[in-house]
Length: 443
Image (tube, rainbow, N blue to C red; front, side, top):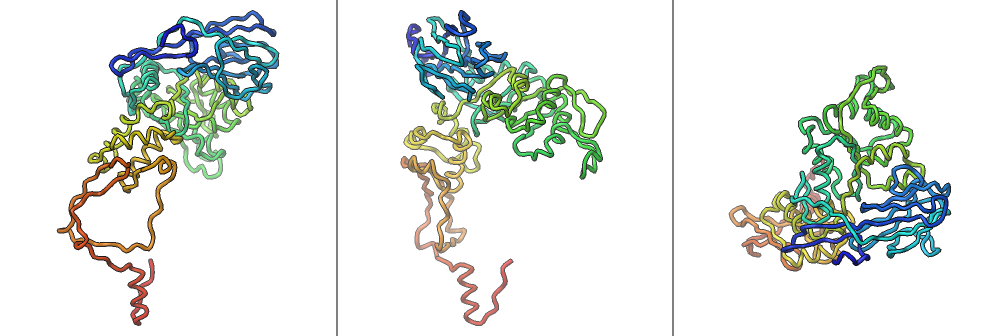
């Protein structure tokens, strides 16, 4: 697209069907009224954050503005303004908005401040990786190659990374790849799911405990940070961490030292911290559910994993990869009509849902034949159907193929004459009972 078309925040150049370059528009944010009137910021970022606290791209002194008030995201569709659950709201044309696309030159009201948003004619290049893979992640789309390029840089550092994304996009794969491509690759990679641990045990799991520290502590225990010494600790679902535990985590991040529950000795730890969440921690900060200082300490580097619906061009590559890693999937193939059907689906469960659909199709012969079938779970097993038995000499090795309708057919050389129905175990038991024979009890 032409550079002077201000309607889009990003654009991509393709050669031979492959993206060769991507560009991000530089934007200007000007405060036209309010306590900070005259403030002008020219910003080169895909996400522009506005609020009263430090760390925002546009920091305001207006007392009616929340710490993380709103953000503007740039993409090929335009400029998306989103309120971050602020106290006094975000307004465009005197209408309070939650999530809306705005036009160039739009004026945004936050608190008693009015801001003008103006895309500029110049742009900066977005770095794209030359590879379609990083660690266990694969993708040819621009968003994934942009992600890979960022991860390649971050892997060479010890910077704390906050990984965001919806459920099922593969946030743990990002943490594993950062560890495997870093100088800590030979060290431990420790995973701790903050959302699956009871609140009364989370401190022990994080920091460890000494023998006798509490009822049931019969032995000393090394926590996640201690076990991850010289390696990487991955804190999954960090947004679920209890508020009372967050200051202790902040201390570890800042001083790189831990103290076991019930202990008096401080242990130094050399590790990298990668955290992940499917929540918007900026919103959680405004709601008082997450500490602001911990948020900024975790978000030294932010990495966002795009949902599958935003990179559907990766579907054929993902399907091929999943088939090769699914038992029995090596001999399966998918017709283009089925891939087209999958492209129409939004995949709310992302790559995890795609894997489940393919595995169910391969292992249970339950492939989707409509968009509604993709939304439904596995079909219930049929009832009251007689089972069949076939002698080994009469059994042919089945081959699997995907038909254009999307369903799997099992092609065999079996004929009706080679099958004989047999009675179920329950029917035989009833038969023996009525004839006076003793029936075995169920185990």
